[in-house]
Image 1: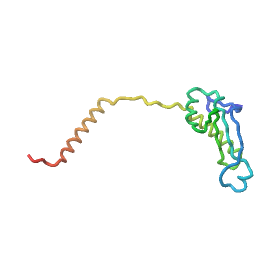
Image 2 (image 1 turned 180 degrees about the vertical axis):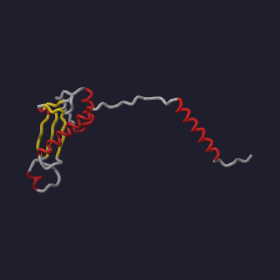
Image 3 (image 1 turned 135 degrees about the vertical axis):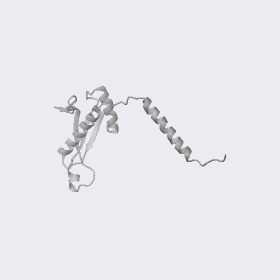
Length: 139
């Protein structure tokens, strides 16, 4: 099965594995008996992602991506395995969608002649205002 992340990007389900572990934190007896937290493991190196996208993905993943090229996402927000599994998948897809967005590079521009003239005129006006505030000197 292929998970369709964007119209151009699809992930093979063989690259994604799930481990169910016990959740941390408060929760009464349920937290001690049931393994509801999900650890999603995504084989980043095995995925055939475009070059630019994979570089941005590696940057966004940060410390969640280990040396072997496996991304680990832990989801334990909900009380059921299925909802945590869906949450982990959605977080993975959101990370890939965010990496798929091309950064917009700023093209440097130069100030126009009119803006330079207005700036110099403003400087001259403020200079005369400040000169008018000076105490009158002895002549």
